[in-house]
Length: 480
Ligand SMILES: [Zn+2]
Image (cartoon, rainbow, N blue to C red; front, top):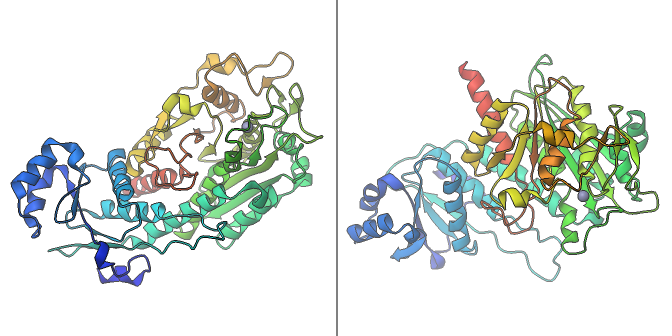
């Protein structure tokens, strides 16, 4: 245990505010209570915990809080830990008794604690930043082996880097500034190339360029390469939507909550954080990141409804709605992704507000042409508390993306399933034979997300999920 105290996170407790929290696995209630010397009325507490699940997280005796956690790691486990931190309001120091928890569960607690403590205080000049809260893990009566603190801390730090970017206002994070920030985060471990508009023009990335036309800010495409293994191994390609501000363009959004559109670049922050973690922990894989950074504004040069754009792959798109800009950006990058001969491609985007009509704030809809990847995401989602819901890509919906005057159109007003429509449109730009997953994080990137550890608006959903999925894949390949 002493090694914990080498890190600032674990400092000496404030004894005045001490609360003891006991996480007890559902099938070990009596066994655990018996071990706790400060608990006298074991039978009564046991009955209360067993018969009344809402008794969890209640202070029952001696300033003790009990939380019954499932034996298996799943979303419920994460949810209980988050509720626990909510209850503590993260304004008091706490001890967590880890006696009956394995390393995986301890990892989750530390990870969520660091994530939950995140605050963006940079723009408040009148308030003093909060004093850091101390979490102490204690193990009574048994020595625990614990070795993964470094990785857990790295993961939470990578997620927090993304959240810092995502919550930064658009006047302080233009496409150029975002590109610079991404380079700053990744360049010591990865090769980072920033394309300007002239270079994008040469590559015919006209979908990306069209969206940025109405803004005085120059659009950028960032290409990141991390080589963790030999050159023959196919890379995983991660594509991120990076709309630094989405006014909707000529199809202007309503003013309510338009300010939240500063977070419309979260897909690119998610990609940055995933590669940050992979490169800093030196995972033996090859990864490429492609991020399209643009500002969608209704300036005089803006692309307009009715315009026809010739995309990077040579296909034409009729613009029906300039607010359906994310898919214009992603379409070019998904086509470009295929040129790297990828193992598979994943794209992350706050693409459609309609996601909330499918899952409220419970899970992120995913679409894929590869059933194995869907299953791997579902398993990893339970392990990290970031659930996904797989939705099929119906041929009938794909047919709806066809335009009368061009090859495709970027929106179809008669279609009520906006999330499905966007995914169907994107599938037109994925090359045959390329395994691909599209993750729409529009509603799970919200602080109302079910397992949210958030105070500020963005959760940056998808980072922990993807890293877990990749770690699971690596573990499997080692056994084969
Ligand atoms: Zn939009």
